[in-house]
Length: 99
Image (cartoon, rainbow, N blue to C red; front, top):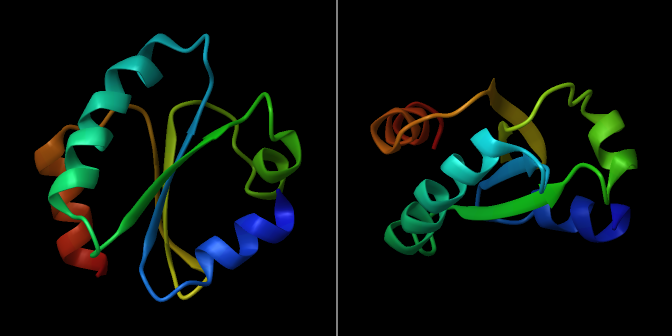
C-alpha cells in the first residue's frame, strides 16, 4: 500500500484522506458526507478512505491517534489536518482555503 499511497498523494489533483476504522461510530457519520462531496467535487479533489486497522504503517507514518482524521494533501505534502466529524460546509471551507 505504501508505494500506491505515495503515488496517490503525489498526483496532480489534491487528495483528501479519510483515516477511519470499521468499528468507529463517528466515522460512519462522516462517510456519507464525504461520499456526497466526492460526487460534487469530481475531478477537483480525490477523496480516499484508509482503514487504520488494515493499514497501520500509514497510520503510524502520519501519527493518526484518533478516527476519523481527515488530511488534505497537495503536491504530496499535507496542507491541512483535522480529527473528528466535519460537516459539508466546514469541508468546503477547507477546500476553498487550500486548493
